[in-house]
Length: 336
Image (cartoon, rainbow, N blue to C red; front, top):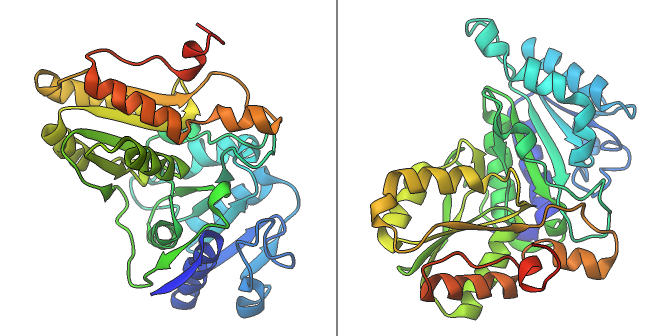
């Protein structure tokens, strides 16, 4: 067991897998000499050399396509996308090529590549560099999408992603890069398996990434007895764990950093409602960000994603009432 920062856990996972498998190569913008824009590849070039660790031109389309080809030819590339928005220019390589290769080749070819990307608000990067954008990939068969919430899951999920025989996208909440936590090197996650961060019997709360920590604080503030499910994997998500929890509590809240429209939590609410409708004590609902660009102004940005105080308000409402609480922007009269 070691204590390290979230970003250091990513370095450790990458290095551990590269030591075990010489087919793993790593490349992206400023990942070699500069050791990553967020220091998530510190020491990797020094240990593994320029044949396996390479800086690329500023061309996500180019180096993502190169990774797809390398994976099809037997290597296991890991690429880093500085900000998730930059993957927009390479969506064809991911959703049309990487995700479909096993299907189109009748299983004779696979694309064992890992795409790491920093995501999320809270650090003042503005509307073009602060989104999570998991919905870009969530409806693409052939992809797996993961998001860690602490140092341990950053380590465990990345090792699982690199070992997977198909393309995996790992979304890293950059606001967590500096957060410290204990890491057990012996734990490698199971893709598609959620983690219980708290247990209780009054309500089930499902969260992802930095929202897990927000939800955890809200549970403490509210004093309720709650199951807190750290989903970890968006695609495929752990239906069994979520359903078993809601069977016990009969209530469900999903906490997302994503905007209200099109969020991943809609799938969870819809599925749980379809399976457990008669057992629910109140309607399941989502706590999300508003449908607006992420503000650059620090004061406004701090209001964008769900906060612990607002999640607390909505948890308490759900336990006392039979309706869905209004989001903060409606409560405060900002939007209807």
